[in-house]
View (tube, rainbow, N blue to C red):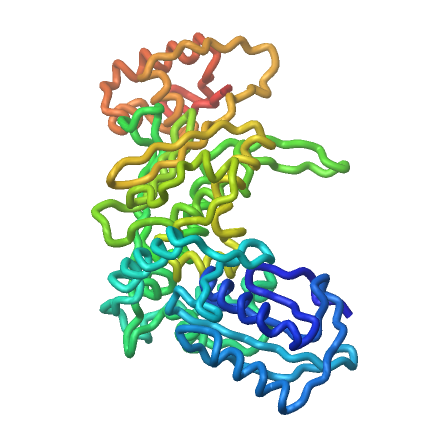
Amino acid sequence: MNLGKETETLEFKKTTGEMKEAMISISSILNKHGVGTLYFGVKPNGDVCGQDVSESSFRDVSRSVYESIRPQIYPAIEEVILDGKHLIKVEFNGNNTPYSAAGRYYLRTADEDREVTPEELKNFFVLNEYREKWEKTPSVASTKQIDKNAVKSFWQRAVSAGRLPEGKYTCPVVMKRYGLVSGDNLNNAGERLFGSTRPVTLKAAIFATDEKLTFLDMKLFEDNIYNLLRIAEDYILKNIRWRSEIVDTKRTEIPEIPVPVIREVLANSFAHANYNGPTNHEICIHPGMIAVYSPGNYASNHKPEDYMTGNYESVIRNAVIAKILYLNKSIEQFGSGFKRINSLCKDSGIRFSYESDEFGFKFILYRPQFQSDVPDVTLDVTLSETEMAVLAFLKQKPDSSRGEIADNISKTVRTVQRALDSLRDKGYVQRIGSKRDPKWETLK
């Protein structure tokens, strides 16, 4: 029998003879994710080999954890039998990072444990100070004010992804186990992640040009982070271009920007935001680009391009929030966000850039140039700003009247009519229907 590969939260040891190494793995996993599972009786490749299990072996594991790991943790240690072979399973969690093993500090990278440098250890304490001030501070929401459907969806996805062990979960167990409550209240991290109080605001808009001047649609969403990730993704996918391809005799719809790119950008935006600042999350869809804004200045001393080319540990502003997003696979791996986005964009031919200031971080995805499927149409690419605004509005609402267009783009009816005439002459639009009840078909 094989249990699969080791991960950032799962470790295998052949026997309790590797006790010292096991304690190092426990501390490194706790420092990275705060929760994990370790098996004695499993080879590094996942093959179950079994080991002798007795009262003394249980005591050895318990005593080693008690003597080696600081601050103190209280793991669940049990015997399991797989394919007729006996194993020791150790499940552990903790929210008081950093944790040490025999006085040394480690971090988990993929399936390996690496001792941290003095500078990284210093960063741990700095980040902990922020967490104590915000993530772990009690909110005004009670423990009853949770979105139970979101919590249930979380643990089901996490188990399915292999990042949570199978078992019986309830909302109170999940919220307490992952440090999302403080007494009778949700803490700030718990409320933002799963609160039913609509604690996080997302502004989303579609603009007629690449400037934030004339908007064609604007929405304000208020919900928890877990739900807003889905809402944000849906909003982008509904408002970008799609093309059709025949794959294996089946017609397949393909978005102009790959879904994995969009998900990675959104997940990192919500994971690393400052939820105690003056600005909100934003999504701005322009004809030439999509901008995703995350409140809070860029937190790392390393530049984004450093993460794309090197292997640096992520500076995690919101450890509890990031942990939850990792467990349900919204985030693939800590510190890999920029590298994954860079790789995905290269594979898809998508350009990107980013901007940062004291208030927030903006990630910009440039939309591919549109290719018309209409044959024998020569399109003039030199459009005025008004023509671009009219064209963009008609794509959203092809049955709009001149007056409606004029009201929404802040122009006169006469100006709109001139723009419509110009767009028709250039082959961008054609009118269908009567003058009394016009509709416009866009050709680009």
